[in-house]
Each structure stands twice: as structure tokens, then as C-alpha cells.
Image (cartoon, rainbow, N blue to C red; front, side):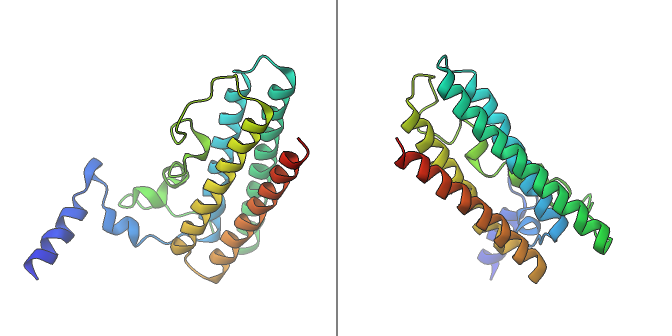
Amino acid sequence: MKAVMSVYEGVREAKDGLDWIRIMDTKFNVFEILEIAEKVEQRGAKFYLGAAQLFAQEDLKNCYYGLAERKVKLKNMWTNMRQDFSNRTGEFGTYDPENYVLSNPEVMASLTWAGSRLGRSRALTGKENKEEVLRDALQRENAVITFYQGLRDFARDPASLETVDVLIKRENQNVLELMRQLDDI
């Protein structure tokens, strides 16, 4: 029992002072899940806009601008859903000074590498062709789906779980669209 308590205490005192046991016990409501999704899409749009600047070819720049536009539209969709949810239910996000993750949706959104250069085995160079661009976008969409599938474990109630499923369904539609574009090459 002492060894178990030692491991437990070690996890509690994890790096950066975050209380990882408390984080694992964190459950998000619909408002918070949509807020996390907004941040994920915002990060994705920012990444795609930055990536577009690497390319001299207009068609590849426009491809990245199109990907960024899709992310902005999704962010706006999640924002509207979150606002509608709050207007209907009066439920908002939680501010808990003792639970940094619950009070800061950016923390959860940053757990997916889809909106960063860090998750790739190699950084974009600006010399990729359209197929490589679309395959990279497909990989990023799949990473977001995997993230949302993991987020299901943090859903507070059936409505929250249903919201995560809506996010996954929408991301799956993005995957299908990217696959269609790849088939057209």
C-alpha cells in the first residue's frame, strides 16, 4: 500500500505543479467541450495561414487558405452552438482556481499537435506538392479525431458525450472531403 501511495503522491506532484490526479478527474460540460473545440479550430486556422506563407505557388497557397477558411467556419459553428447552448440552459464554463485545465480550454486544445509544426516528423518546407499538402492536412484531421475520441473520456454527462460525437462526426466529414480531393489529383 505504501508503494501505491508513493506513486500516487509522485503523480500528484507532477512537473509544472499541475495536479494530474485532479486533471484526470476533470469532466467537461457541453459549454466547455465546445470551447475546447473552438480553440482547436483556431489553432488549426492559425497553422494553415502560417503554412500558406511558405509557398510561392498560388494553387498551394490557396489550398492552405481553403483549409484555414474551413477551420474558421468550424470555429464559428462551435461558437454559435456554445452560445445557443448557454442561452437555452444558462450553463457556462467552470472557473475553478484549483483546476487549471478546467478553467483554461486552451490547455486541452494544445494537447493535439494538429495545429502546430511540432507533431510532424519533418517541418513544412514550402516545397511540398499538392498531394503532400493534402496528406498532411489529412494526418492533422485524423489527429483531431483521435483527440476528440480521447475527450469522450472527459465528458461530464450524456449531453457532453453527444457533443463530442458531433465534433467527431464533423471532423470525419473533413477527412472524407480531403480524401476526395486526393482522389482528384
